[in-house]
Image 1 (cartoon, helix red, strand yellow):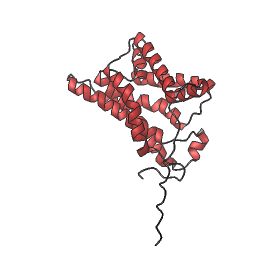
Image 2 (tube, helix red, strand yellow):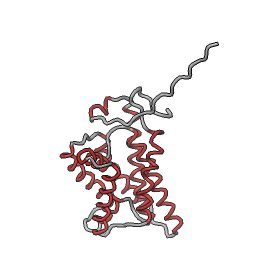
Image 3 (cartoon, rainbow, N blue to C red):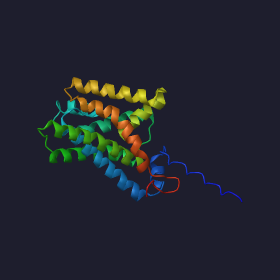
Length: 227
C-alpha cells in the first residue's frame, strides 16, 4: 500500500521592491488601489485619535505638532508638508516612489484634518486613553493595509530604507535614529510627547508585522491572502 505524499505548503506572499511601472503592472490593480486608499484614510484617522486622546503623539507627529505652534497651518497640512520635504531627501538616496508614495504624502494629512474636525477631546481620562490606544491599534492595522497593497512605500518609510541601504546600518538602528531626531526637534518646537508616544514606539512594529499576512497582496499569482 503506497502512502499519498502530503503536498508542501505554499510559500508565504512576499513584500516586493517594485519600481513605479512594475507596481502598476503587477496585477489586481483595482483591488490594490482600493486597499491602498482605505489604509491611508485609516492611517490619517488614527493620527487624529491620538491627537484627541492628548496623551502623546507618534514620533513624527511630535514634530508636526511642534511645527504648527509656529506656522499658521493645521496638523494635516504639516503632515503633507513634511512628506514632501522627506521626498526631496529620497533623491540622493535613489529610492523608488510609487503611486502609494505620493498618495501617502497627501491623503494621510487630509484624512487626519477631516477626522480632527469631527472629533473633540474628551474630558475623561478613560475616554482619552481609549482614543490613544485605539489610535495605535488603528495605525498598525492601517499600515498593514496600505503597505500590503504593494504600491510603494510612504515617504518616511522610504527615508528609513534608503538610509539603511546607503549607510549599511540596521533598519532598527536607522529607524530609532530618525525617530529620536524628530522627537527631539519636535519637543524643541513645543511638540506633544507623552505615554502615547512610548505605546506607539513599542507597539506599532509588532502590530503591523502581525497583521501584514492578512493584507499582503500576493503578486506572484494574483491572489491575496484570505481572498
